[in-house]
Image (spheres, protein in one colour):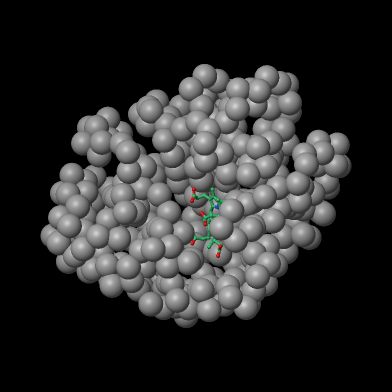
Length: 333
Ligand code: CP3
């Protein structure tokens, strides 16, 4: 494994490593080709040779500084016995929540169900393409996983107020998810992941109870990962106060979304930063993109900064603009 000080989470201000959230995915023709022959998304995530191949596709094409294992945050609900399906044009669809069944899941059962993910990590970590690069393992934050488990689909139009009626259920479920998320992280590290990222894609849906539902469980996971000796990146998309998040949760690196002002971040946040660029710029044109990329690089010139997007790359992203993006970052002085 690479020494920690050489990975994408580092304190070096002289270089800007680059990778993109959701880089292994639908904007790539080579991914779409595999996907067309593999209609069942969960099965694809559990196909260790194909998921390893998909993980490496963006590295082969663009030479990013890190690979992120091809899997999904919803593999955790799947492994604790809630049904998860992905429907074309709709997104994830989950089955009914059965807390007793979930709590009855043993660690062994969980690990066995996700064995192919761990095997894919080991296989990928041995690829020559990753010689000097990181392999990122990831999880959803307990809050975001819980949102899917209770809402049973993406909360595109927000959450109904009845969602918040039963804090006991929420706390109980958060604790259970936290336990399995930790196990999933440990298994990914044992398999060969050398950086972990926590995706809290729906953090922005909460206004009250942020301490209880986001800070507390995420802090517990961050502490746990630090003890395992692996750097941890948090992506609390849409939260209003990144400074407070960093002070309380204490990740090694913070990944910012595209709605926050990077000037405020560089002024208020001392830890290494990642991300920010609105993924829509990869649908625009070269000049527009270059200008915006250089804006971020200039703002974070004297700050440890890993280039990334402010949310996942869109399926409509233009491949040649991804090349422009990398070249702009690599050439920037
Ligand atoms: O980053 C990578 O390239 C690695 C793989 C990865 C996927 N999902 C593969 C995927 C990662 C890191 C994720 C994380 C994920 N999954 C998040 C957090 C990041 C974010 O975007 O907010 C969330 C919320 C999910 C849940 C999920 N999975 C949704 C809502 C969907 C459907 C719509 C969408 O955004 O794509 C998925 C399916 C999914 N996960 C696809 C891929 C490549 C698309 C599958 C397809 O239709 O071909």
